[in-house]
Image (cartoon, rainbow, N blue to C red; front, side):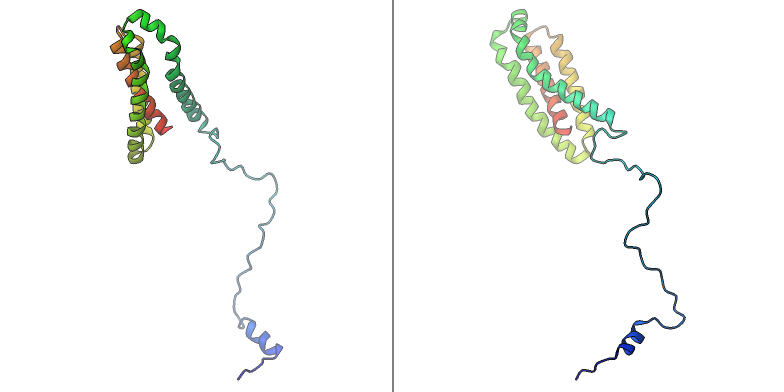
Length: 161
């Protein structure tokens, strides 16, 4: 059945054989170091060194896109009076919002395949082109085309920022 061992027999079984080299035990806590702890960069801080410029640039771009989307509402009555085309008044807003939706989808698809840098760059190019075209528009039709380009670019920027 069962045999019981004496404490001497247990101690003999638990001790290492003669001549064996034993590795030191791992310390439960690392030894204290003198001086301050070494600085480790915070991976979650968007303003950490090396990222402050990028974060500020992204924030300014998003603010510009968001501001521009609604700034036209203030000035559009004066634009319509200058260019004519009251029947196109609603399209100045609709073209922007519809193409922004398309830009978000297209930018998201590109971002999934190639990362966020490419759709962001595409968005900045389209948005800037639309701003220039809309700013120098000789007619409401050209203004609407510029707004459509701005919307598509803004959507690409939103999907990747």
